[in-house]
Amino acid sequence: MKEIEIVRYTAISGLTMYFDCVNYRTPHQHREFEMMWIIDNPIEITCGGEVFTAGKDEITILDPGLVHEFYSKEGCTFLCIQVRPELWGDSSKLPEIRFDARLLSAHMSPEEMREMRGLLIAAANAYYSREEGSELYALCRMGDIFYRLIRKLPHHRMTLRESADLEKRRALIDRLLAYVDDHYAEKIRLTDFAEQEALSMSYLSHVIRETLNQSFRAYVETVRLNAASEMMQDMDRKLLDICYAAGFSDYRYFSGAFRKRFKVTPEVYRSTVSVRRSDEHMLRSLHSTEKFLTEEETESLLMRLAAEHETARTSNK
Image 1 (cartoon, helix red, strand yellow):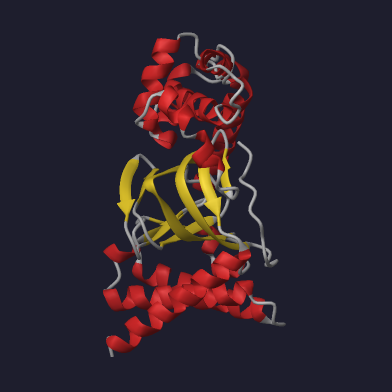
Image 2 (cartoon, rainbow, N blue to C red):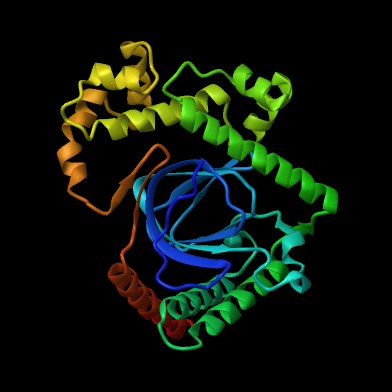
């Protein structure tokens, strides 16, 4: 699966920060640690065989290579920070570390959480700053953040064999997701991919269930439904044609699956296309429905968050 394109307003090799508003994103993975500071509505995260909800002001941490999926009924705005494990060099030992917890609030006090949010605001302000040397300040604040993560969160160090096995599995899942992207509109079978990879069906099914937290068939259906919803932007296409183009062979089954996934029938969903088209910044694709905040929106939100943080900090003295 192709990585989502993100507009970068600054260039710090190994560090990416942006604000996003997500309704849904199919299972995906990164080579980076991914932190999320939830700004408003809750988001449901599926990863590593577990499902949990992160609410307003929660901060989450996801390990490199950990396949994860997002869903938020109302649309969740969050600050996303992606950090390459090698950002501070091998001497940091960060490439070996994997965290055994996802929600920071379970291991940090309210005051420690406020301090973490303050550090994130400082790092983000420096990241988006055009002042000379601001990238150094951003990296220092992120170093402080990961120092606190290592001190407070349960974690373990991977062995060389575990690291190699993880990379092998990560590459396999990447190939699987790309295979579905290329063939979802056809009669797609896991047996064909298993034969291509020279792997047994039992092993492959186990890996898929363990990493995607769903079966191969369920994942393919999700991609097909997302593809169908995107095709509905073309008002000249008939729903029956869209059903077939997305890989479904029976309209009744398609309609039932669509209603289960989107909570409305294809006909009702199609009728709202003009409303959904009005937001030109909304990205809809095979894998996501989300909106990346513009530079102006980012600056405005950062100012608001900084003011709210300062008010909370002074009121708790």
